[in-house]
Image (tube, rainbow, N blue to C red; front, top):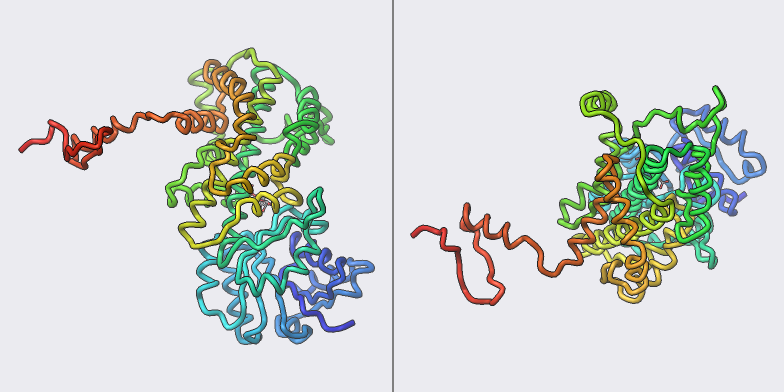
Length: 465
Ligand code: 6PG
């Protein structure tokens, strides 16, 4: 076997799966893990692929086992461990070598590292799809210099998932932290998609009194239509799963406190920094935070009483509401990326982002094909103004209103769906209410305002002297 030009550091679940995927696609690969036994166990368990994998015991041995120019993928936890690996590799590598951070890095860190003048090339790539994706085809959002993308393109596109039209779901998003930024927005949308599904699940469970076993086929049916997506598909499987310990639905036995590693929160924080509204994603992050406050929620229920016995909502309305919520959420996510591209000087191509998300990643869905087409017509236009999605929204908005209204009247919290609707209503109102805010600002702080007739009036009559 010729010496590998590709290497991988970090054989945790994702790293091991990615290494096997790379070897399977015909690229010899050298691997190293901090714990030597992990490296050898991985190699021993690689079956036929072991012949293309070179296990190494030290970082020096990894570098020595490779031919130049080397491309070393880091699959280590985000944050300090990445900086530590970069520092450890610095004395070992040549300027033409390349190190690729494939973890869930904060894009600000990736920007910083890309600008730090490392003694080798550096890329930051977002990889989505969990273990199964990493092993058999993730979506890859690559960031870095075009020359480095060109070098890695063959590998990334070989290992990536393929959309239904055969296009690999791996592409170059832009320089520096662009790939990790797109991955962060992906995760924000992931949080929002999951939250909206959880909200309609809640209406079915608490409002309509349906059992998990009754809810499962509803999700499965929705997965045959406009909502066809990985997350709706797995929601059907989760709702339908039996508890192997006690029988009955497993879903009813799972504690209602959501974990999070922070990527959704980064997206919400960044949206605030950019001044671009993503209320559906922000609501989803908020709801995860509330979910973990179990004691306070129990105290709240003890004080104010439980929610409603029953709510009148049609299942069709829930499906339509989910469609509307999803469109609104993606419209916000793409608008945020457009704002970020301007702010950070990235040539982010919105249709390309939508196409990369069509397969392999957690938010993959049938709707992304239509989004890619609508964005290709006019990449800068908000998705809610694209004729195709405007048609969808006109059809589904009445149901979203009925669902949100039912939730509000009966005390079922639907933060993400409500936030989507409120944003939509603000975005379709030419004459808003911020004239009152401008009047208040001028009253207490003489901040000034503009008149709608264009006449010059620096301040209102409340200004003294
Ligand atoms: C993916 C996911 C993945 C993420 C998990 C858990 O695209 O494969 O986004 O990167 O780490 O979904 O995220 P939370 O722990 O924040 O829910």
